[in-house]
Every structure is written in C-alpha cells, then in structure tokens.
Image (cartoon, rainbow, N blue to C red):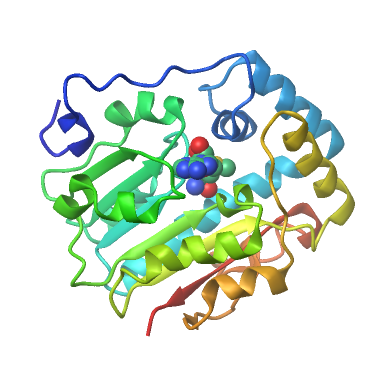
Length: 278
Ligand SMILES: C[S@@+](CC[C@H](N)C(=O)[O-])C[C@H]1O[C@@H](n2cnc3c(N)ncnc32)[C@H](O)[C@@H]1O
C-alpha cells in the first residue's frame, strides 16, 4: 500500500463495515445507472424500476457526473489546489482527483463517503501521485466537525489556504432544509476566504412528475430523498459569491464548447452551482 493513503493508517483493529446486499444502496444504484459493475441484483432491480418510470434518469445522472468534472476543473483553474469531496460515490474514472490533478499535478484531495462499497474500492482506485496526495475517509457527512478535525484531513489539507468543497448529488439525502443549510455552513465556516463550494442536488423543476416518481421509488427502498426547487437550492450559497450562470440545471452550467443543446432541460433533474467564499 502506498504511504500517501491516509485511510490505511487506521488502527489494525479497524473492521471494515460489511456490504449489505439485501437492500439497495444509493451509491450502487447510481453506479448501475451510470453503467458501472459495482452493484448487486437488489440495486439493479431498484434502478430498472426507476428507469422504467423515467428513462431520462440515466441522462440526468450522466449530466450530473459531467457537472462534477466541469465544476472541479473550473475551481482548479482558479488556482485552488486542495479539495474536500463529500459523498464521493463508487470510484468511477475520471474521479475528482484525476480532473484537478490534470490542472495542478500536486493538488490534494480528501474523499468522504459512508458506504462500505466505496470504502472497499477506495484503496485500489483512489490512488494519488507522488506529488498529489489523496486521502479517503469512511465517515458520515452529517458530522462536519469530526471530518474536518480528523487526522486524515488535517494531514492533507491546509486550512490557511482556499479549499474546494464539493457536495455533488448528496444533499438530497438530507431531508430537512434547515439541517441541510446548516450542514453546508458547518463545512464552509471552517474554510478560509477564497474557498469554493460546488453543489448539485435533485430538483423536480424541469420534470416534476417523473422525477417525483423516482424519488418515491428511492423512499420505498429505504433511501429517503428530497427534491428541491431552484429557490430552495440558492440558500446553500448564502453569503457566497455565485459564479455565472448561478444555480441552473447542471447541463447548463458552463457547458463544454460545442455541447450546448445536446441535452434537453426536461431530461435533467439535477440543479447546482458554484460559489466563492468572499
Ligand atoms: C448519488 S451518489 C453521488 C456520487 C458523486 N458525488 C457523484 O455525483 O458522481 C451519492 C453518494 O453519497 C453518499 N452518501 C449518502 N449519504 C451520506 C452520508 N450521510 N455521509 C457520507 N456519504 C453519504 C452515498 O454513499 C453515495 O456514494
């Protein structure tokens, strides 16, 4: 194991949590819909049911992943070279560190997720370079203090310099609005001026009925989720400087040249944005 993987510094008594294949997990359903192989029949059945109710779900999830690529690249291009990615998902290349290290090879990234299957694959797939250190933490994002004070984070990120905080497709799992805003604030309050926040989350603004059905399918399987209107997403960026074009459906956020119009608004149920902490 490489010595730049802080998660390997866990005490030898650390017991990796077991992967439960009897219930669907959000990370594995997402992986299946994106075309990955790290999922089980229970996840495939859940995904099939969701795709039946809304075939564009696959387009929407792919566009969400592309938003992660573009927003992380853009933040790295502003000179930020350290990132905290909360709700990482099953590693799927390119991961955030590959994107930002293509801009700045020495960029450092801390990944956080609480799904045992993400932990199982993190060691092999989230590997850094000698100059660009990568750390994975198995933790619940709902406790920002524990994450930010962990030795893994403190050894990897320098809080006297700007950090890129990325919370992509994860806030829909925090049902209460005030708790969700407070959660994001719990991370941001500890980051210095010049840090950036990138968020995407589920919205039914563009496809109200079908996406409502998908959210209900998640809930039936024990994965309660909450969709938010653009007006409900904007407060996540309270007191920050939103970068153009603001909070939009993710495919409309600084699309790559030549791709505008390839995807219709009604095919995307994720909205998001990027903002700078003044
Ligand atoms: C839909 S995936 C998004 C993955 C990735 N950010 C992306 O957009 O491509 C949501 C991820 O959030 C993780 N997650 C959900 N609740 C979490 C929590 N309380 N703490 C940490 N991770 C969580 C899930 O395990 C899953 O991997």
